[in-house]
Image (tube, rainbow, N blue to C red; front, side, top):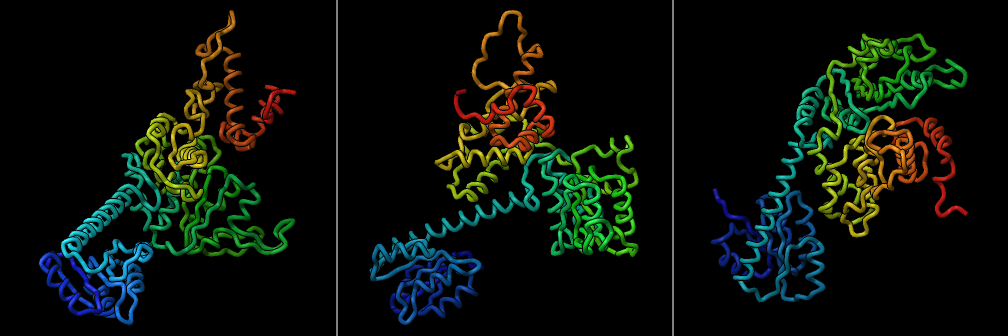
Amino acid sequence: MNDLATLLIVDDERHTREGLRQSLEDEFDCFVASNATEALEHLRHDGIDVMLTDLRLGGDDGMKLLEQAMALPKPPVCIMMTAYGSVETAVEAMRRGAYHFVTKPLNLDEVELLIKRALRSRRLEQENHSLRQQVEEKFSVQGILGRDDSLRPILQTIEQVAPTRATVLIEGESGTGKELVARAIHHLSNRPKAKLITVHCAALSPQILESELFGHEKGAFTGAQEKRIGRFELADGGTLFLDEIGEIDANTQVKLLRALGEQTIERVGGAKPIKVDVRVIAATNRDLAAMVREGKFREDLYWRLRVVTIAMPPLRSRKGDIPVLAEHFLKELAQANQKAFKPLGEDALPLLMSHDWPGNVRELRAAIEHGVVMSNTGRVMAKHLPAYLSRPGGLGWRSPVAGGGAGGSGAPSAPASPGSKHAAEGSPLDVHAMEKQLIVEALERCGNNRSEAAEMLNMSRRSLQRKLKQMGMVRRHRRRGPNP
C-alpha cells in the first residue's frame, strides 16, 4: 500500500516531464501525461492529489485542462508552469482555481517545496470540511442547530420517529422552532419526496379552516362557486403540518378526529368518504392538557395527536446554543443583505447571552439581522444590536404591569419628587411611566407598525390602541422633532 501523495505531471515535452518524475518520485507517487486526454484519464481513475501542468500542451490548452480538473467531484490541487509567464496569465490561472503559478526554467527544490505546501493546504481544507460535517451531524438535524444538552434528546426523538407513521405533537413557545422540527420529521421520513402541506390554524376562521382542511363541494355554502380540494387531499401520500392546533373549533375537532382515526375525509357539503394517506404533525404554544380539563379541547383528539410528543425548550433555557445560532444567522443574513461576513464582535456575544429572549430563536434572528443592517464594516458589535438589549428593562423582559423588570432608558433616572415612591416599590405612577416607555420603544423598533408592536409586547392590537389613547400617545410616537 503506497502512502505517498499522488502527483500528476503534464507536459508535452518528454524530457521535461520525465526529468520532473525522476526528481520527485522519491517524495511522491508520480504519474505523467503528454496531453490533456491522458491527464484526464489519470485524474478520473488514479485519485490525483496534485497536478503540475504546463500552460501550453501542443494542441491542447492548459487553462482548459485546469477548468476540467477543477470541475471534478474531487479536484486536485493545481500548479501551473510555463516558459511564457506574465502577471496577467498568473492571475487568470489562479482565478480559475490554480493553487500557484511557476515559470520555467524550474527550480526543482522550489517546486518540491511548493507541492508539499499545496498538500498541507489541501489536508487542512479536508480536515476542516470533515470537522464541519461532524459538528453538523452531531449538533443538527435538517437545519435544527444546537449543542445544548436539552436539545440532544429532541434530535434523537426526531430521528427515531421520522421513519414511522406516528402522529407527532410539538409543544413549545412561539419562536422555538416547532415548524423546523415538523420539516425535519418529514424530510427524514419514508415520504420525503411527497408534499409537506402546512396549515396555520390560528390565521383562519372556523368556517374557512374547515373548508381549507377538508375542501368543499360546489354550492356547499354561499360563495362556493366551484369545488375546492382541501389540504388533506393535497397532502395525500405526504405530511400535513397543523400549526397552532389549539385554535381549532369544536366542529373541526370532530372532523379531524375522524380523519386521523379512519384516514377518510368528507368535503364540506359532500357525503362521499374520500380515502387519504396522510401523516399528521401538529404544533401548539398552548397547554392542550389544561384545555382538555377546561372542556375546550376534545380529550380523544388530544390522545390521537400526542402519540409522540416533542417539547421544544425556550432559548432562555438553552443559552449555550446562542453562539451557534448567532453565527449561523450572521452568515445567512450577511449573504442575504450582500454584506461581508465577519465574526461577531467581542462585546456583542455577552450582550446576547445576558438577554432572556422571550421571542426565542425568532427574536434572536431579528436582533442579528438588525446588527447586520446597521453595521457598515461587516463586524456586528454591541452598538449595532437593537438598543433594548442593552437596557436592564428592555422589551425582552416581562412587562412591569405583569410584575417584571423596569424598562429604563439606559440613562440615570431623575430624582424622585417629594413623597413619591421608588420604582422598586411599584408605585402606580412609576409602573405607568415604565409601561409607556416600553410602548414607545416597541413602536420605534417596529417603525410605528402597531400590529407588530402589539405582538412584541404580547398584547392584542386593540389593547395597544386603548393604552395609546389612555396615555395620550395616539400621535406622539409619529413626531420626528420638537413640538411646533
